[in-house]
Amino acid sequence: MELRTIQTHRVPVRYYEGGSGAPLVFLHGAGGILPGEPILHKLAAKYHVYAPLLPGYGDSQETPALRDMLDFTLHSLDVVAALGVQDPILVGHSMGGMIAAEMAALAPNDFSRLALIASAGLWLEAHPIPDLFAMLPYEMPPYLFHDVEMGTKLMTAGVALNDPEWLKAFLVMNARQMGTAGKILFPIPERGLAERLYRISAKTLLIWGASDKLIPPAYGEAFKKAIKGAQLTIIPKAGHLVTLEQPDELVSALGTLS
Image (cartoon, rainbow, N blue to C red; front, side, top):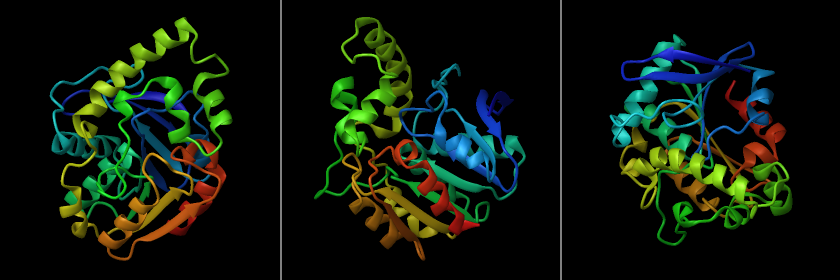
């Protein structure tokens, strides 16, 4: 995967590109794209992958002009247009799923295939979503992973969560990223998407980790009820970061959209 830059109406956008085959646009979650993200490499073995970074993520510049859900949705549509891809498979994970669903609802004729992976965007009173913004690093792995020990090592590359230098770097990175994510996820990740899901005409696949404790599979069922014809796939032994824990099973599930 190569890290490149493309100019949009508002801001230069950094994005990863690689692979060959049908075009696929991958929108990341609130945690961004980790170094060596396995899902991108797995996808690039089958698709021509474009994975843009939201402003404030990685080395991309922050963009105060992006203020609300509509701004983020239009920005992401601008990115797809700037990339010059026609009718890509649109895939979004968590926060990226929320944006992808908004894009498919706002521009239903632009996307014929949609995959939402553990997507944010809805709110179920019976299953309130924990507040990531209030969590310290050591509190996150149980919500994000099926295998908490393995997940902790993935997040920290083996460094202790209480190591002061690692914690300082984490907090600086997290402040930038969550400053962006907070505009659409804080105080709760709900911006009226439920009222717009009926507009989605794309063939839609919903993918959830069976052990997701952040956005539990009940949300997958709610999306399935709201999007006509949507199919739900539950992947065993995976939590919210199913992209890290079970990338092969996830890519295999995406094959049903081809």
